Image 1 (tube, one colour):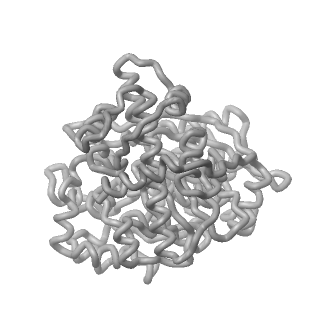
Image 2 (spheres, rainbow, N blue to C red):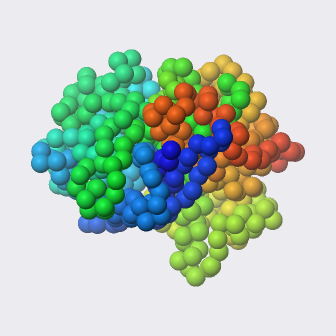
Length: 486
């Protein structure tokens, strides 16, 4: 049985066919495309219609290749959404989480509820890109269409709606809004009312593995394709990826590597206390009944933006060459990757130089030095986050599982092992698509649970291991890092 996974990241997307054979998972990439936001009227928005076009293009490719697709699952990044009006139409293209409209919206929210109480109720740290602040921005701007909206659909739910005509909210993505109530397993309607948002726009919440519906007759006729089910997966891409971790042990640290780096552990329920607040940890919905205690770190965004600027300046360099330059470079400077200076897209290498200069550190000048500063700083941020997780859970974790596209960066993988003093196991690179397929398979009754799915992944991939090396240099830099983030 062939299943199609659509995995939308914050910079690219892909359509991948998956099939289970001989207790292994076999993937075949059918379609890959860029996902670039568009600046319109001084606001950053997703080119949603283009992304729908890419879905349709992928479905046509599958048909032309003779692929008999039985189901589709869609995962995306978190927090962003579209608004649907009373006629079932999308009101405007979804805004990008980096759009400036959420500036100062956390303070607006804290007029209704304190930061501490909001974190306690939601289990989520108060990041300005969270859906709650985006929706509050809708009430403050001339661009607002909230009064015309009947339904708010987060990005994967919006794609599912376009394909099926069914409006549902999948659990893992719903928890990224900061408007979910873990105790009631539903939207936090008391909080929604308290901050002045319309409760009518929040749809029914469903779990991963739920059959949402079939592709609409209009799309089948337009594309000349056969009927196909749409299954809810871990619609938040991180949760689908975690389903594909080839872990044998129950307790481990996971690191999802991409535009964002997400560091966390799986728990049975939410954990909220002074330590989680001090370290900026959040509780996000996981798969298989788990809750993921994690922190979102700015991640490879800094590398991506640096490459974009260098390419813009006429320097033809790829990610592989950047890592090679970083391996050769040495530097004593450190940054805080989560500093607000690095949040918006612009000249990232210059921002890094300014940050270092502002703290009286040596200014990195070469490509290699800038890459080294970014990657060592990321490794130290990961070390700091793991310390917070271990304090919160009162456990010590011996193993780190890293997955996603960033595991091709051998420098980063080794730096993480060195900084944390823990063994790092990497793989799979396409963890999100694998997890997406496995969750479809659970929904279709092909496999029983996540444990069986992880066994299938172990049978299907080759892993790499990074053991800690001398970290004296990083230990010294960590002391500096702790001073920087105070």
